[in-house]
Image: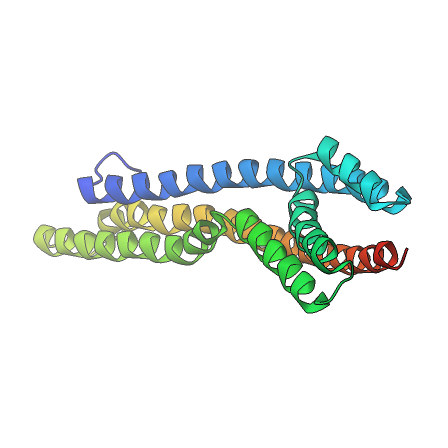
Length: 211
């Protein structure tokens, strides 16, 4: 079917093949990152909830690095410790909350890395494949006119060759869209986990300050 293809058709197929490889590479890379983060976060969160003092949490954080929750904890703890050291009380709880939110935003941005490529591949690949198909059909009809024949056997091979690029475009786009939606759900769950931790951290800091 591709025996008589033009260099343009091969170029389109090469681009789509490259997109497929890229989306698979992003999938395996992000899946490993998300799974590792969920596992290490769970371990640190268990230690955090069992800890009776802030010093115990700090010790647990040292052994759990570089899990995302530890990065968020570090920012909040640094701000809380600074306030307690200077005034012996939490005089600006809003500053602690803002610091935690900054940490959450940084960690979510870190795990969003390269996911925009999945969205781009999912949206662009069908159009690249369609472009190859349209130009291929144009070429097939030009050849049909030059041959002066209207039989299906004359135009069929050229059209079937042209349609290959649309099929390959969909093959590249569909997995990318599935991967993007999958990681979008994981990012949402991660954000909820971070927000819940920020609330638990605020409660522990207030208890520690009261003691």
